Length: 316
Ligand code: NCD
Image (tube, rainbow, N blue to C red; front, top):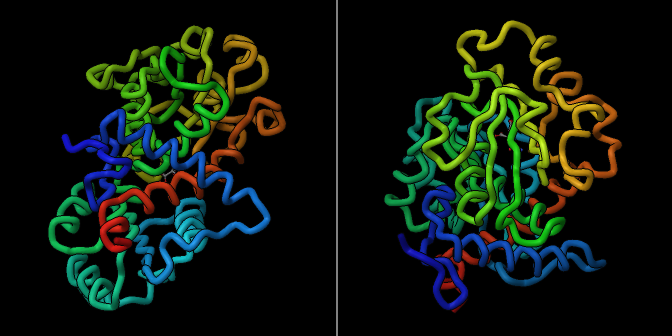
């Protein structure tokens, strides 16, 4: 595995947490802390990527991630193009590689891609000079989400070493869960996955996580309760009896939070299905960090773009 050296990442692409060492992750989180100062001050811009071009290419729906990447690029003074897949030649049958090569020929230095197929990013990364950044590939990985989540936890709890982090819900279909399990365990946290056996199969224990099918037991003494959306759009068939029953067994409400540590924080990557995985009043709980996650996403993505090898090489 290539690791962080001389304060920079050795790779030009950000494909997944899988490719990052613990040092790489910590390097990104340290830099994100610096960029958080930038995005929370009155003048929110730095000239780091002036003259560079970032293209957002989203084949799947997104609100937070796309806007966050756009803002991160703008805060770094890059030019940003949001490629409109719906009205593009993709609809005339142009392949993903042709599309990305065209974008690169137009001068893109970074291509941020959300695509339904895992593996697409890796392939493109080998074919083009531009930095490819994975903004979600099917059910596989969503590395920048995990980085912003670890950043948020670190901001609230200090280092992740030894923390008990529970992820609750549709682990099976969640790229957020996969990237987070990799990142959190690499940083020394104890991860417990909670949900029905159909959504939390035993195989996940191979990733170093514990599995628990009882919510009250699973979140006992948790430092972080991380809720996930039921990804109905990815489920070919119903994997639990009804949303009502799911809510009763695995939904988070103030009563259930009593089982976690008193100062446990509550997280969710969004979008939230209110009334299913979270009750509305959890949003007003002072321990909820869901909007902080959104804010921190910009800083974490700025750090990633800044640290990728291509950016530094171009800077020199
Ligand atoms: C997630 C995603 O798209 O993977 N959302 C996000 O990026 N903030 C999770 C989800 O859709 O449930």
